[in-house]
Image 1 (cartoon, rainbow, N blue to C red):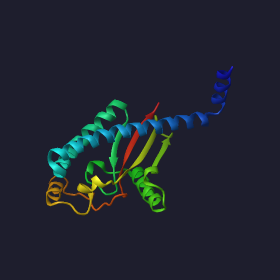
Image 2: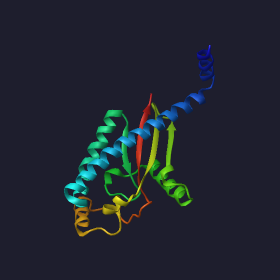
Image 3: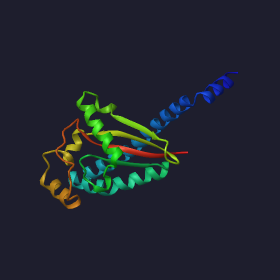
Image 4: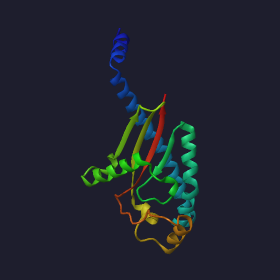
Length: 187
């Protein structure tokens, strides 16, 4: 009897069904980002151990894209990183991402904690419908080796070589360095 009542409620209340689906997509997106971030952090830490921050930059230059592609392929979604201050021009934010990143900055300035800065939206006007999700990448102490304002000559030289148009420096702990972004077709 309970199953029939729940089924009838879901059948007549499609907004509830959508809300549950969106919650599930947000939870799955968080898991995907966690998988990506853990793998990338492990590669960067290994690069740091093997040759310091200069080597970590080289690892990030190659490994980040590989990890991003592997996770995207595994899930069937597009997962990537973007920022308002780019290091890699391949991570250029689209208009939606730029708007969300600017909103994140305003929310942080208004006192919202950086850990809570996330946003999702579903676009039903396209076929298939598209779910998009973004979560902030906070600047942590270790990040300052390559993203701070006091870079070693070795790091500065490596950045100039690999990213001549680099804008992703001058950060302080607690700044928004960028965001993980997910685009997912909804069937």
